[in-house]
Length: 429
Image 1 (cartoon, rainbow, N blue to C red):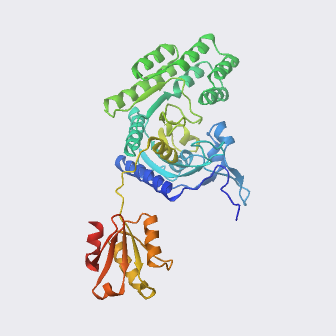
Image 2 (image 1 turned 135 degrees about the horizontal axis):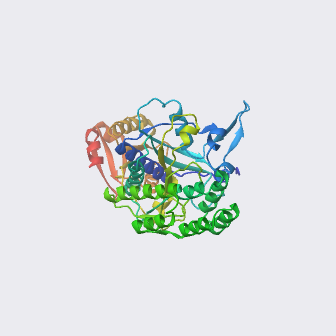
């Protein structure tokens, strides 16, 4: 027995799971189509410099980074956004705006493996680039809502915040970017007490510390009320106030767009990536303590990569996490199950006839397997049963002379002779 196993943090998808993953991916593609997002395919390996530029300490530490044989520092992509931003800064720079871009694939982070957290994971990624308007942020949230609804998930909640609020306060207090990022990282990990302690150490005004503390405690489903309280909190900080106004506008558009989205506003919400500049969001369900999707606005990333100033907002949906959520909620795939058929030649000499009949059925869009193990009839039928085939088609000499085969309904255990030209109709019927 070989003792080979998957590498830690990697996993195999068995046929049923693979089918479910592709089903979810299909729904993501459908949403991309409905909203006018064009697919691009980017490399799994990118330059380390590109991926680490604004990733944030947490992601930088967890990248699969290595020197290739040409001595270049490269890494496996931990997310899609830098690759998309690279394209927009270079190849696509002269294309008309906005860009609505979609990509889907595997990503890699050296995380501690646990429920719903693997080192190889799958995402569909939607980026809307070129607009700084609140309707762009609203669109990203609305399309995510449509996507999750289309796979049949229930009771999911959008958590929405705005990094511009805290960044605005810190900017007015002249806090260095390095320190701001550190505080945000702590808040992303929900280490709020530590974050507040760090704010005190940085040496800001007493009022600033109090405001940060108040913001951390502000969260709730009554979005207008929470936004109102945020406004009171940041009254004297111009940039932070602008951020609150922007958040309110986004929420207002979503409410008036009649999307019926459950939203919690969380003023102390932060995400680990340093490039966010505006509204940020995550989606959660009660059954899991990991986010199913996450994203936000990043208005400076494309400039950082040498492109024109290009405001942008995007979101990544965790396809494997959505699968886990569907399993937890017992959500079924809505695809109509195709009939499954096995063709069994009654003896050696009839193998070619069996292949010919199988071909004819596949041409009509029917899933067909041919018995290729040389099993005796009884064993072949037993196997068809075990594999939940709907029909067995037995190719026998006597019937073939009349241009017919035996069609056996596996569930009801009845069989009849059927003309070959009527076979498609009978199986589909």
